[in-house]
Structures are given as C-alpha cells and as structure tokens.
Image 1 (spheres, rainbow, N blue to C red):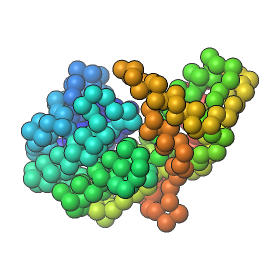
Image 2 (cartoon, rainbow, N blue to C red):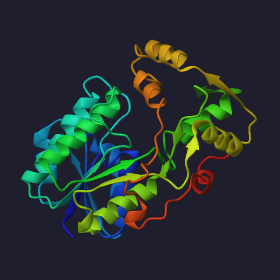
Image 3 (cartoon, helix red, strand yellow):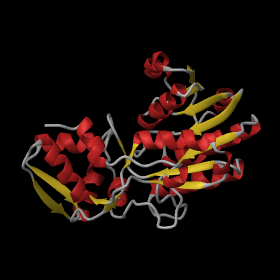
Image 4 (tube, rainbow, N blue to C red):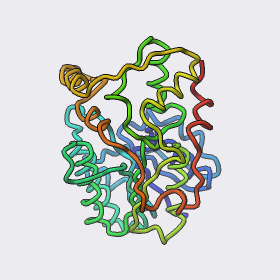
Length: 301
C-alpha cells in the first residue's frame, strides 16, 4: 500500500485515524504544524510505519511536500474557535483547497475530506459556512474526493463529554442552552477512524458524501443527565435563554482563548443529526458504538 498522508494527524480525530491505518499495516505520514507534539505516535505504528512531517494547510508549499509520493490523503484539520490568523475561512476554506489542489497535482489516488454535519456555504454561522465553502472548493479541485461529515465526536480525551464531566463535578447547577432541547447524534471517534479506513479500501466511495452519527439521538439535556449519572452527582439543570449565552460569549471574545464563542452558541440553536436520506456508517458496513457503551470507559465518579 502506498503512503497515506494525514493532515492534522496529532489531533483528537487525527490520532485515531493514524493509529487505525498503521495498525492495518499502512505507511502513514502525519502532516502537522508541530511534529514534536506528535512524537508519541511513532512508537505506536503497529504493523505499519508512522512518519512525522511539518506542514501547515495555509502554507501550500509545505502541503505539496507532505503529499509527495502518497497514494491517499486524509484532511482532518479543523477547529471550533478562531485564533489570530487561523480563521474559519483560512482553515476550513482555503486550507482545505490547498490540500485538495496539491493532492490532485501530485497524482494522489484518493482524498478523504473531514467536514461536519450541516456544512452549508450559505449558513449565517461562520463555522458552518466555512465548512460548506471548503467542501465546494475541495470538490472543484479533486472531483472524486470522499467527504465525511461527522456529528459531535466523542471518546477518551474528547473535548465534549470531558468538559461536561468537569462541570458536573465542580458546579452544583449546570446551565442548559435554552431549554436543552437541541438534538445531537454523537459518534464514536473509533467509528469515524474506521469509516476512513473503509472508504480508502472501497473505490466505490469515491466522490460520495457520508454523514456519520451514532445509533442514538439525544437532546443536550439528555447528554448532561448521562454525564451526571456517570459522575455520581446530583445536579440541577438550569434553562438559560440564548440571548444570555450570546451576551456572555460577546464578553468572552476579548479573552485570548475564550471558553465560549458566539458561533458556538449559534451552533447550539440547531439540531446536529444525520439526514433521513443520507448515506452513513451503515453503508460503510459499520455498526456504531453507543454513548452508553463508551462513556463508562472514561467518565466516572
């Protein structure tokens, strides 16, 4: 198998993908801005090999070097909060274009682009809009790209349930976004990694879009209750109007690393679930793990 280059391979999802591919015997190149932060991956190659390389999706020359001699490319780079020059448009839009364009010019056979549920180039959410624009740019540069749109990704070291569990341990009252009725369909990080491996192995997935969600749909309040139960606490859930969240996010915007952004509040106003007619994990032959099965492995009292 020719080399597989994974952009963002040191991140939460990227690490899982790298280890999955290497365990299957692949030669994986991890393309990241700070290779030193991914050095621990080199000793966990399994039956394959793992190589680290410095690359920044905004620096197209470094992208070109990273995709050289690769048979497949996976782009996992993304973030929920804009920092300095790393805007949503720069990372999810132009950064995605750089990867797709250089993959095409290098003769790469397969490209998998990780997007997100609800990606829409006409959305009023800067994050969702940039994701949607990124998909359009990727398709223009690499027509046979496979696009995966996961819902909220969970698993050990995630930023979602771990943050909720920290809140449940420390705060006697847990605030809800509105009445906590926003619907989410969390998907296990291992299942998303498996989806990448299955897509690479099946040429029929080229040019297709898959929406990835777990077996259950929950309200935000439901998920908080699950976390509270796992931590063994008794906590009050307090509905908080969205205009209050928006005001808090506006005040936090002056902080170097705000814990909440206005765009994150906007995202919590809409459901994040797989479409009724969308292809998903089932079409990739994957039976998804549930929150109830995985959560006890890393969130406890």
